[in-house]
Length: 299
Image: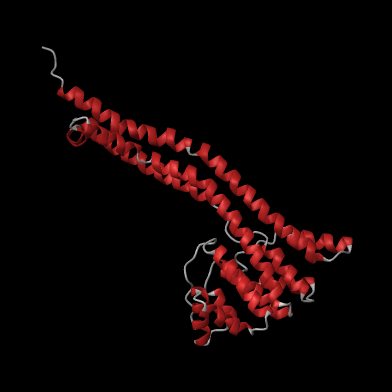
């Protein structure tokens, strides 16, 4: 059976998903069976739970039905899968996951808020060349005839439009590079900690996470080092992993804010190289050509 995945960006609905996961944890802690907990959540009007239950009624396994929601719900499916396999307390795991998701969503929101001002400024500046062209109309100059009928004006029009296009592509690339990191910071360490809390060995825990639905959203860069430290020091790895996960989320927030701060200065480059010259070519040059063409030559 092919499961259609609902399109969703990496951070879409993470806060709402965290609230839903918290509710599921409370229902499970109260004694509800996993599928019944989802049915209770669906009965409350939760759209995600309604789709999950609909898939389950069609014969799709619960974890696959959760994973099909995409985005942050892949993290839920991964934690659910790992906790079920190792026999970790599902309610406790989901409560911890809800806090992790809420923290990650807050970090992503902080980055988006920091990006809002430079992104808005960039979009506004892209309209400068068109504003210059409209200014010529407002002042009563026949800039259209100049841009179309005059060879120099036509060259200015083509060059100005190419510069506007270049500025748009350049700015879009800068904005895309400044967006929050894909995936969930610290999720790999959190999932390994869940597996270890259920009594799985380190090798088994790593393999479970590698096979989980969130394998494409997790980064294992620091987990191995923490596990080595745990072995060397002879201390439980669970708390160390959760501390590293929290630090990863903090680092992601700091990196995002730094990128947003750099973006403000980086946007000056396409402004100076493309947008301002386009403004001169489409706004100022037609005015000058129109004045020159309407001024009679001295005899």
